Image 1 (cartoon, rainbow, N blue to C red):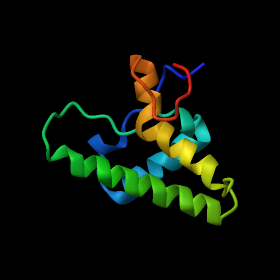
Image 2: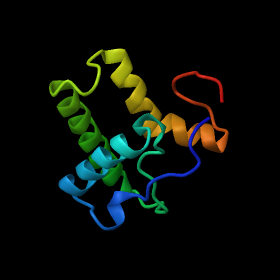
Image 3: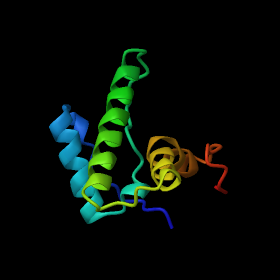
Length: 105
Protein backbone atom coordinates (compact mmCIF):
# COMPACT_ATOMS: atom_id res chain seq x y z
CA UNK A 1 0.00 0.00 0.00
CA UNK A 2 1.29 3.42 -0.89
CA UNK A 3 2.26 5.46 2.14
CA UNK A 4 -0.23 8.06 3.27
CA UNK A 5 2.22 9.72 5.63
CA UNK A 6 4.88 11.74 3.83
CA UNK A 7 7.93 13.50 5.21
CA UNK A 8 7.39 17.27 4.95
CA UNK A 9 8.57 18.98 1.78
CA UNK A 10 12.13 20.41 1.84
CA UNK A 11 11.50 23.44 -0.36
CA UNK A 12 9.68 25.51 2.21
CA UNK A 13 12.80 25.95 4.36
CA UNK A 14 15.63 24.43 2.33
CA UNK A 15 14.86 25.56 -1.20
CA UNK A 16 18.38 24.98 -2.51
CA UNK A 17 20.43 22.08 -3.87
CA UNK A 18 21.93 20.91 -0.56
CA UNK A 19 18.63 21.20 1.31
CA UNK A 20 16.69 19.15 -1.23
CA UNK A 21 19.56 16.66 -1.63
CA UNK A 22 19.83 16.11 2.14
CA UNK A 23 16.07 15.73 2.37
CA UNK A 24 16.11 13.04 -0.35
CA UNK A 25 18.89 11.28 1.57
CA UNK A 26 16.81 11.28 4.77
CA UNK A 27 13.71 10.14 2.87
CA UNK A 28 15.68 7.25 1.38
CA UNK A 29 16.77 6.03 4.81
CA UNK A 30 13.60 6.69 6.83
CA UNK A 31 10.90 5.87 4.31
CA UNK A 32 10.52 4.45 0.82
CA UNK A 33 11.86 7.03 -1.62
CA UNK A 34 9.99 5.50 -4.56
CA UNK A 35 6.67 6.15 -2.72
CA UNK A 36 7.37 9.88 -2.25
CA UNK A 37 4.85 12.23 -3.91
CA UNK A 38 7.56 14.42 -5.38
CA UNK A 39 7.59 18.17 -5.69
CA UNK A 40 4.25 19.57 -4.64
CA UNK A 41 3.21 23.17 -4.81
CA UNK A 42 0.13 25.21 -4.21
CA UNK A 43 1.18 27.68 -6.88
CA UNK A 44 -0.49 27.83 -10.27
CA UNK A 45 2.08 30.32 -11.53
CA UNK A 46 3.97 29.53 -14.73
CA UNK A 47 7.16 30.50 -12.89
CA UNK A 48 6.79 27.50 -10.57
CA UNK A 49 7.65 25.24 -13.53
CA UNK A 50 11.32 26.14 -13.11
CA UNK A 51 11.16 24.95 -9.50
CA UNK A 52 9.73 21.60 -10.63
CA UNK A 53 12.54 21.29 -13.17
CA UNK A 54 15.11 22.15 -10.49
CA UNK A 55 13.69 19.46 -8.19
CA UNK A 56 13.90 16.85 -10.99
CA UNK A 57 17.52 17.79 -11.64
CA UNK A 58 18.42 17.46 -7.95
CA UNK A 59 16.58 14.11 -7.80
CA UNK A 60 18.50 12.76 -10.81
CA UNK A 61 21.80 14.00 -9.37
CA UNK A 62 20.96 12.33 -6.06
CA UNK A 63 20.09 9.02 -7.74
CA UNK A 64 23.23 9.06 -9.90
CA UNK A 65 25.38 9.64 -6.81
CA UNK A 66 23.69 6.66 -5.09
CA UNK A 67 24.34 4.47 -8.14
CA UNK A 68 28.01 5.52 -8.21
CA UNK A 69 28.38 4.70 -4.51
CA UNK A 70 26.71 1.30 -5.00
CA UNK A 71 23.69 2.10 -2.80
CA UNK A 72 21.20 1.81 -5.68
CA UNK A 73 20.81 -0.52 -8.63
CA UNK A 74 22.19 1.14 -11.76
CA UNK A 75 19.72 -0.41 -14.20
CA UNK A 76 18.09 2.26 -16.32
CA UNK A 77 14.58 0.76 -16.11
CA UNK A 78 14.75 0.64 -12.29
CA UNK A 79 15.91 4.26 -12.06
CA UNK A 80 13.35 5.39 -14.64
CA UNK A 81 10.57 3.73 -12.64
CA UNK A 82 11.66 5.59 -9.48
CA UNK A 83 11.85 8.91 -11.31
CA UNK A 84 8.43 8.48 -12.98
CA UNK A 85 6.91 7.44 -9.66
CA UNK A 86 8.31 10.39 -7.72
CA UNK A 87 7.75 13.00 -10.41
CA UNK A 88 4.25 11.95 -11.46
CA UNK A 89 2.76 8.54 -10.82
CA UNK A 90 2.58 8.49 -7.00
CA UNK A 91 0.61 11.72 -6.81
CA UNK A 92 -1.51 10.76 -9.84
CA UNK A 93 -2.33 7.38 -8.32
CA UNK A 94 -3.23 9.01 -5.00
CA UNK A 95 -5.57 11.43 -6.80
CA UNK A 96 -7.03 8.75 -9.09
CA UNK A 97 -5.51 10.22 -12.27
CA UNK A 98 -3.89 8.30 -15.18
CA UNK A 99 -0.27 7.24 -14.61
CA UNK A 100 2.61 7.43 -17.09
CA UNK A 101 3.84 3.96 -16.13
CA UNK A 102 0.55 2.37 -17.07
CA UNK A 103 0.41 0.55 -13.75
CA UNK A 104 -3.07 0.14 -12.26
CA UNK A 105 -4.31 2.81 -9.90
